Image 1 (cartoon, rainbow, N blue to C red):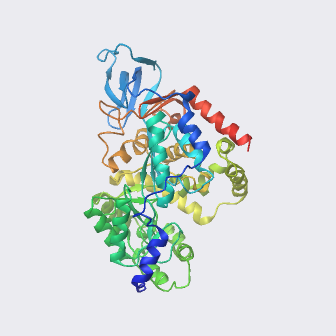
Image 2: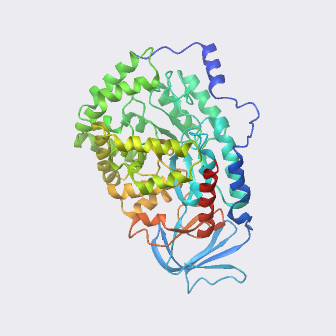
Image 3: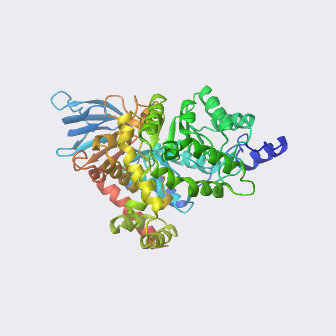
Length: 508
């Protein structure tokens, strides 16, 4: 059914050409002068002392572990929470910096659990500032070439150490796909031996997880899952089109991105659709990976949305729950034909912080998209995605908030707040939405004892809000201050960052 693998010489040449500069020393490059400006000189040019003690006094604390706790004192020393509790039980250390938080709300720093930091070279300089301004202190980069993402990771680590002006990055590296690539940055695996080699190389390069993609052959995908698991690494996926979701989940898949291809497995005709996809792929010689995927989507996607079967869906969701296969819905992109945020004037205002030529390109693209009628399959996809969210919760499946930015005109940082609002619209409570962007990603990486809640010993990555997000999830946008790795950025400083970004654009 599937093509024979290429010969050994092809495999070696292809691997060397695509990714693995790994046995060579990595060349750490300067991304651009603008990013260094923010890393070295932002936040009023101050390098915060790591031993400064802060007290967030009389604050209302909200996290997914303990819910809402009013009248709290939270003490931070260095980059850790050292004490928290009711104001009558937690005294203020002498010499500490007191932050009066009466009437304000403290939540953990946010995650965007699906981003592509290197997708646009022109956009890179604004990435870190915009993420921090929006309270995003952690990101999971879900596809990037190693020679692009590794220098950025080094930049982020240095910025965090100096002044907390970058999020912590969890790195995936390139997709592992089949012979016909959908993205040129992906890596082809066409034999089980090659799959093991790629996984080993990615692990040695420092990735935090592995990701497989749409056209990977089932046998090779199963090998990736098995080999990564033996090394203690999670695998995320666009579930390969030649596989059923249950098969991938049973083999140990850790997360599904965008709920992609889930709709096909929940169709009443899932088995015949699967066989038809396998046939299309087997006969796809001479087509690019992107053309093959598009052929399949045109043939099956709308039909799958229209033939969702309750009994089959329950079977699929039970398997995902039993196997602890998480979902990253990315409603900001999967339901874009319905919510059309790119047509909203308030959202388009965020484009003014983007470097040129991205800003001009996005404004033109937003106008063109707003003038186009939504497609039938796009609307079906949106309503299917909205309908699936409460079903995931009911089934006990973990959900992480992610956006896929900067695809689909999703502005770094701002788009995560749009995602939270969409998750609530689809059926999550505001606290569940906060959980999806704080505790859940920490749990996914086994870091819940360090991140995702507000308690003694946790990392000092925090947001102070001016309004209660449990009353209205959009209140996560009303940020008074951001603390990243123990460095406090006040509202004045955050506004100054935005002003500087906007002014830089005006001079270009």
